[in-house]
Image 1 (cartoon, helix red, strand yellow):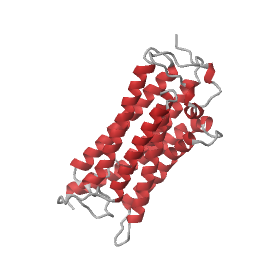
Image 2 (cartoon, one colour):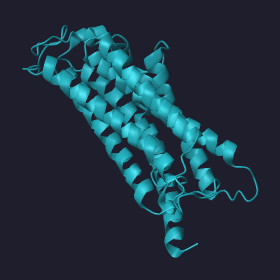
Image 3 (cartoon, helix red, strand yellow):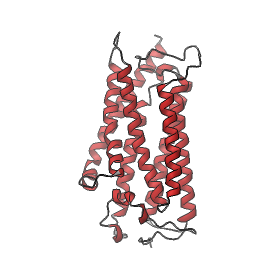
Image 4 (spheres, helix red, strand yellow):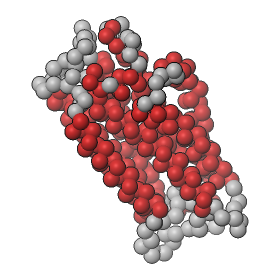
Length: 290
């Protein structure tokens, strides 16, 4: 193994361990908010998606870190790698469900948006799973590594799912911006601003890290291919939980007494609270800031 390949492998191990540390740190500094605003709530789509996106990355990060230091030798690592990939997929999908719920709420309970986004997301998911289960080998020399090496394997098949995720995030960003322009242009509601700002920030960050993942896998040597593996799922988990918490903080402000008895999970679970109307009218049940 060349010095460059050795450096790439070490860098990948360090970044994955560092991402795990960030996940643990963020969990403990937000645990109080999670207990206050999510525990004790009824189980539904939103709470289930939040819990999965919040906790599956711990298993994924731990298993990825273990894979980075494990010497497999003649042992079969494929079942373990499949389990890691499945956990990563599950955490990312759960985070995306929370984003879709935000956009659905922002649309004022417009089922057309929900159907389109779910169909779009399902198509992206199915394509990504197929690419992961049946990798595409273009026969490019040096494009394949042993399955038990802590390196990227098939460049195209590894990069495409991240490219599809990036494409999906761009679609969500465009939809959110359109809804803001169409229904909330003149609204100064802090709750609307929180959903719009945090949603765009989250989607932008995921788009950036997905783009970087595509570049790393497609351009850099294979030894660098796992650099953003754990950081990707950690970014999803951290941002998803924080957007939900920030939504609760905005809702709890004195300016919005209508929502003081409603949690952020209930708010997203009941998107009819948002009465999006053409022409940028104010959201029903809310008071604009002075």
